[in-house]
Length: 343
Ligand code: CP3
Image 1 (cartoon, helix red, strand yellow):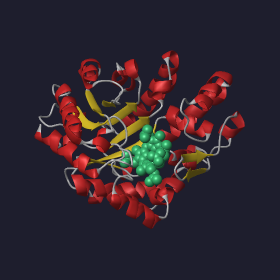
Image 2 (cartoon, helix red, strand yellow):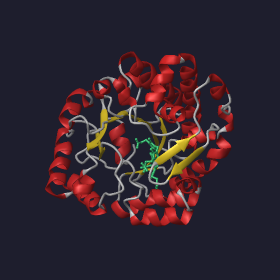
Image 3 (cartoon, protein in one colour):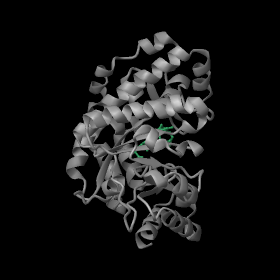
């Protein structure tokens, strides 16, 4: 029987105090992160430097004592390993070479060829599994195929995922083939993270909310279900967290439809709604609004207690509804943790 609280919650146990970690917990709001990133040179160099990536993963664990550490990497490293060009424009975000034709999809590398480029990521996982405190769970991750495809098709982040929706309607065959290529590569990428020591994996579908109706089933639910069943076949008992961000009603039944052990909830829905409609079928993670890490004060304490209370009757991992932002104040993170643990 494991004593790690995150693993207990993922196994369906209702704990008196929810375990806690935070999306983007290693990030620019921490001065020690900014110093290590400067040492690495830039963000991508940091991702591929196993020692420094492990160091920034450990920084929020040392400072705050979170119950889980998430591997420091990025969802766009997989498209890069498949052959896409990737760079980050300072102050703007990621840029990639675009893929909008079947020739473009066919020109991607076969999935067996991704591991050379990704070897430093597996090494980061191995370092972390040696160095993390005994009670801290190590989470590996990847982007879900739809979200990764939106960046590969548009070559950048987009507000409405327009280019990906356009390809989906004008050239369904190319779009579906791209989704399949990402899906199969993601299985191998996550499987290697697990072999290196990741104890849980999380799939980030940040743009799931823009898929509606049958598209949500075909491109959010089905690829996630395929990845989870393949991973669990290779790694029996592996817990998986799925994050179909802004899925709204799509959160209902998502765990059952995909085989996920936990559904991460964003802050566009209330914790009371999520407890009633999603937590009834298993563990949930979430869902404090990230802006409280900027604004702090009584609002932070009240809303933190509200999330804890709403999810108290079932398995829950406390988290934000999305990543912490660079303008956040680390003191507010400490206050949130103190509030959760003292509740
Ligand atoms: O959560 C963690 O601490 C683990 C590491 C992690 C990062 N990105 C580090 C990162 C994880 C899990 C991600 C996931 C990710 N990356 C997603 C899905 C989750 C989400 O936020 O919706 C997406 C869409 C990406 C792609 C990406 N990476 C974007 C759009 C950006 C630019 C936006 C920004 O915040 O600057 C990144 C850069 C990035 N990834 C940073 C970090 C810490 C900031 C880079 C820096 O230090 O300059």
